[in-house]
Image 1 (cartoon, helix red, strand yellow):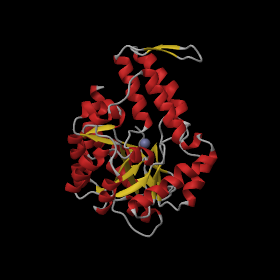
Image 2 (image 1 turned 180 degrees about the vertical axis):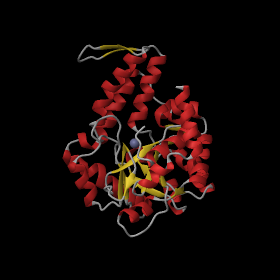
Image 3 (image 1 turned 120 degrees about the horizontal axis):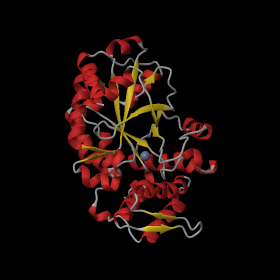
Length: 337
Ligand SMILES: [Zn+2]
């Protein structure tokens, strides 16, 4: 382990991965963040540990991007993919899924210090209701139930989980997340509310920084950031009835365009828990809307041959500087880590 870490440090310091990068066709990276927290411990409790990045680390990462890479926007990447513009080597775009308020309060001002503009994908129903997306609410519910030593018995199957036990908690969490990922709109909201009533617990909305408002999104846009669509309900699109795709993608887009008073040209696939993230029907729906880009959570680099409506990204969840550089350098060298 220690040897592996030392080797990483040496490879990064000496730039030993660079020759491999020069041999490959030009590629760009799209980084995928979610929440940026001033108080990581508190915020990652209710937003979810795996998707929360500490604000100080984020600032260091933006400084690294400005000094060692070339920050670009998704519009520029879209132009490059269409062959109508060039991009400098080591181009990197910054994106944020879900639409958390901290993207407005914390991430955007930091990025602007380094003259970087990002893309924020809004979960439309969550923004409209100013309520965290369902996967944050369920994760919080199970985490608190573990602390409260809840024993859960499913009324239909009679299965029992002791939520104080991390493995059983995880199993129960996944068991109840799968149905959520296949529901949309009111049905999904009712299911989550039923879970909260069942657990006799819910997130205190007054005590947290939740979703950004449409007004804040409009302001970000005026400051040069891009606002994209992250669907209406944040379901797994490949697992919902096909007739609901229109509502989840096109109608959500329409609401966004009305609120922002401008065209919304970029899309991000939600990926709460089920595979795959997309299928031919979802792809057709995004084609109809003429999106410039659609991004996935699949890990990888973007090349000129990438399909603009199925772009891979590099997931970032609170790495330190060395891990951050390692992630970007190995990705650019085409190495899966
Ligand atoms: Zn999401």
